[in-house]
Structures are given as structure tokens and as C-alpha cells.
Length: 138
Image (cartoon, rainbow, N blue to C red; front, side):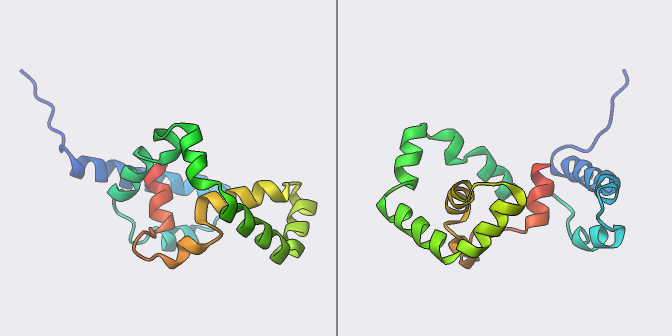
């Protein structure tokens, strides 16, 4: 009987991840990212981020009923903050709308839902490495 010997568990996953990072370099370079920048960005990225995998698996957007999710995220205060941000960032929102054709209200809604208008950036306890996170999800 022939037995195929392959590393099991995380070691195999890490090897597959490292292979993905190495092979994705060509795609990045072809898209205009310099090889040196890619290499620098991925220099210490050697394995998937298990926290990111768990967060992706349990995202409330996909695990909670839609109306429950929206009821928890959209309320008088979030609308008021959105209106304040629309006034504060009006010149930038004008430019983005003119250049890219993206409606300011869509941008504000995404900004609110994804980062609470940047407030999440102050939470070092939950912030993750962006490059490693994107590679993990890739």
C-alpha cells in the first residue's frame, strides 16, 4: 500500500499560504505594484491570521438576521454623526463624487458601517495587519 505523506494541520496550511503569497506577487506586479514594495509588504507575513478567519466566519452581516443587524447599526446617533461627517468632509466628498461618480451617501454609509467613521482605528486591541488580513482572506 502506498501512503501519501503530507504535513497535516497548520504546517501544511502555512506552506499553502506561503505558496499563495509567492504566486500572487506576479499578479501584483502585473497590476502596477513594484516587486520591491510587494516584498517589503509581505516580508514578515508567513501564515494566515486565525483571528481574521474567525471574524470572517462569524461576521454579524452574515450571521444575524438583516433587520436585527441594521437595527443595531443604524439609529438616531449614527445618522446624526453621518450628517456631521457629510458637512465636515463635504469638499472631499464633492471631489470623490466628481472624479469617481460614487454617491457621497454610499461612501458615508460604508465608512460608518466598516469603521464607525474611523473610530475603530483607535482600537489597537482589535486592529489587524491589513496585508496579512487581505492575504488570509485571499
